[in-house]
Image (cartoon, rainbow, N blue to C red):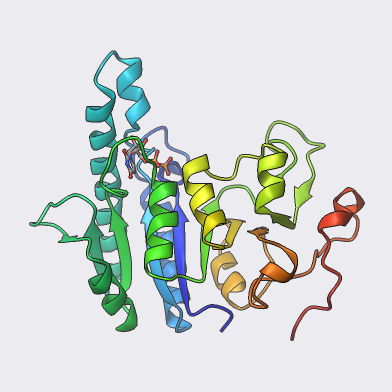
Length: 267
Ligand code: UDP
């Protein structure tokens, strides 16, 4: 296997599917089934899911409410999504544990790093709820931090777009996709991958991020099998471990030449 342990970040918004709010049952089951397939390959899977389909802290401020209170509401929203995902996984006979950054002892275990690692070693899918448990952070920050703590090999950021582009591909049809990009180039080009806190954590800890399209069935498994999907963000060059370096797939993207790693793909 390419990876031993991964952290999969899913946005809450993606859970809405075609709806305007809440959880789309079909999308939820699709995610659960993708995660089941991933776990069945033997890779250890940890998941962080956002809460944007239910509540975001910044919404509270817009209503004139207290931001910190809003952030805690957002964290609770992530617990709701995490519980839904846990149930969906259990329906598919996947063994799971939900560990929360906020203590809600009737429904989830408190987050304890050693416990999380032990669950993973036992082959359970570990879901981290309630972000990092502190306001003014996001679930992207939680994904980066937890991934570093559990020594995951990579953060897989599942989105509805198949990677990082020069501009928003949904708005700008001329936007070009990056296949490989370094942390420094993301900052220099002001690309929107994660919020800066989350991104800096990954950069400082040399934790690669792969942004990929989670809504296409089978993509997660393809990634785990070593296919070069989406966009890989890493240190680049010799700073990457061989596990993470990969070549640019599409030579048409000549504007991206500096990013091309011409090494032949490892079998
Ligand atoms: N949140 C927080 N601390 C955390 C994680 C989340 O305060 O560690 C709050 C924050 O208000 C955020 C909301 O929970 O807006 C939902 O998470 P996020 O926006 O990251 O969800 P996503 O955009 O991935 O759906």
